[in-house]
Amino acid sequence: MPNFRYKARDQAGKLVEGAMESASEHELADKLRKMGYVVTGVSPAAGTVSIEEMLGSFNRISVEDTIFFNIQLSSMLDAGLPLLTCLNSISLQAENKKIKKVIGDVRLKVETGLSLSEAMASHPGVFSRLTISMVKAGEASGNLPLVLKRLADFGESELDLRQRISSALIYPAILTLAAGASVIFIVTSVIPKFAEIFERFHVQLPLITRILNSAGIALRDYWHLYTLAALAVIITVRIYVNTRPGRFQLDMLKLSLPVLGPLMRKAAVSRATRTLATLFSSGVPILESLEILEGTIGNEVLARVMATVREAVRGGSKLSEPLKVSGEFPPDTIQMIAAGEETGNLDVMLNKVSDLYDSAVAYNIKKLTAFLEPAFLLIMGSVVAVIMASTLIPMFDLIKILRR
Image (tube, rainbow, N blue to C red):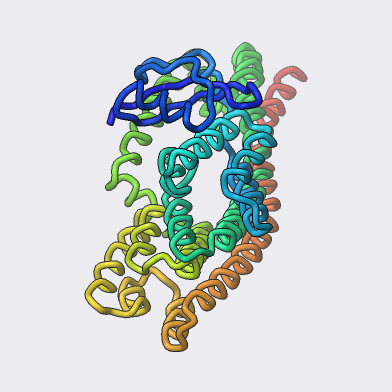
């Protein structure tokens, strides 16, 4: 069916606008009037974007916004309030204009007869496939408030893990940027001036000084060419990484890194097991859960493993058997999943695996941070020592010449 944009006023006189599929403009206008709205305009959805929408695109919907939405909706539904009342109240309270508009559109679609999961599915950029599948399962089982609570808990766990990793990398990143800027300034501005003085007095420059001087002059005179070359390399790599073979090779490289590889693997295992536990406990079928996990695990190597696991499970295999064959999941994870399958508490055991690896990731991040700080200081100190030596060694020769 064609898509139409509409503008209308609700009973309080508030402007409501959005897009909806309908057979015709008249049918959509009649539908809105029956819902109690005063229609002010209906037109075919054009491909152009208004200035308001362009400005609104910068106002992103954060993970925190969706978590808070799930918490609010779960609490209000659990208190016995009707779904439309909940959506209307959350829309009025939302501070983010973009999510306010999305929730308003979801409410309007639910009011026309769609289920909550169907209304959410019309906003794939806001509600993930994981969210939509779990909400659909919650609607079918009558446990929608509980499912939304699990979604909120899952989102908080994911956000906490992401923030831990980001926090561990902030200090080394700032230190690297500051040290890099200082080194570039010294090499491009300070060393060339010293080199001119030394050459004027015919002082023989050491090899390291000549290398740094040549590199500084080249960087100072041809910085635009180096910038263009770096941008070309970055764009080329990004284009390749956006292909499936490129993502696979990049993720394989990440998992094989000496220090960060095991940390990334543990984080991926934690994410995978928690996602499966959340889906299983919400009533999503196992094959659909594995398919959702394949698209949300965030690592192409493990995504291919999940595709193989899904086909094996479709053929009647247990979950733990193809995971063991893949060799990508740690043995303790396989054993705990197998124990969960034997006892019939797979979702509980998956949550325990996730909690275990969350703790392991937190401990490894703490160790990594403790290692990175002195390591970066040592590296930066060595770089500064080399630069200082490249200027001090010829300075001694200059002093000897001046004494003659």
